[in-house]
Image (cartoon, helix red, strand yellow):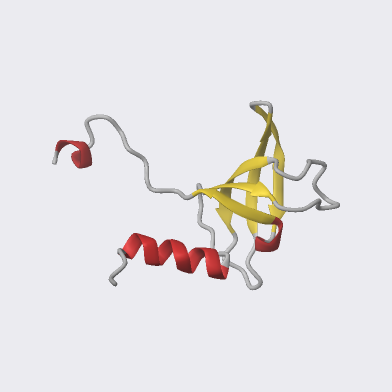
Length: 95
């Protein structure tokens, strides 16, 4: 059975815990340096491209900015992968 490229990529990202900028994530565990509860949602703003991997995430609480924090992949889980911006009237919509 053949799988689509997107399905293969999603599977690979889940297995290796790869994230990219603008992915929507949430906290998986309590982190001493982050005063937010488990399940707090945020957006990856910067992929530090370091070894071990680290990300700068902007977290929100009740629709308000809760802060920018550095996290490692073990601290977060993917909620909504970034698929690119869709702008009305963009070439992608017109084709």
